[in-house]
Image (cartoon, rainbow, N blue to C red; front, top):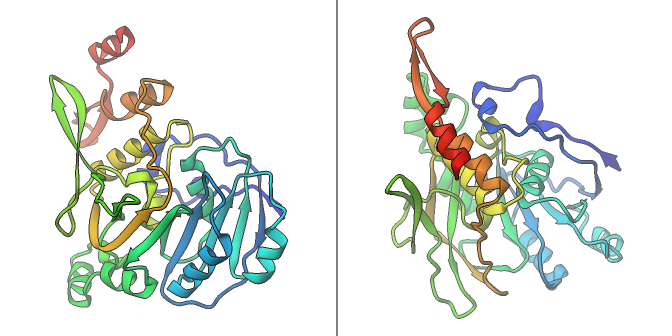
Length: 315
């Protein structure tokens, strides 16, 4: 079926969605398969595809065995000759056919609009679980303890509407030689210039500015409230940074877990931090504005100083 979804622009948009600037409409796409599995873990898997076509049947079988409630596979290639056979063998897998030019953030936005559970795990086809691939155990570790959730609800906290620890939880990554990768990033200002300090997450709940390679377990409600990925950014690196900045500025958290480990079976992707149009959009949204106090409304608002604009234009 052909459909255009607009999950991120519905009539119940919350205040923080306005910060996303995701004003480009989602493109039309085709959905194949997707029979209900009847799972109750609350966690779905979103599978992104790149590079060589890895053994798809064994990959889907592994995800089904892991107990995910639903599996959504993003298909960008025009070579979809095996979809009918795959859909018959794996009726619970939803295949979404997209134009090959869509960036990763847009792919995730569309897939997130298709999942029904409260959590979704973004994965790539060239990643393999080394440890912690059981969906039920992943959800169990992310649940807020009942006593703390009840305490938060009593004081009007977030526990009234959600019971999960954070916006996104990122696994630990290893290369094909089983060596840990420096996938945690922390922002550092050096002479008023933003730099990122990569490190290997060695402790549980180590913070990171953004989910490496977009991989992680996302809280769908928080993801929607933040507006998802900015579809106006074509560069995946700046798209991820934008989501990370927006999450932390709105009081959300992105942290690493030692209980989920993934290994790359293909080459390690090199992030493109080129100073392109996406970087300019990221800068104007996240680095140039300053907070001002409005005496009439007694609230804060974002202001773009003229000096920041001139500095931006000069560069």
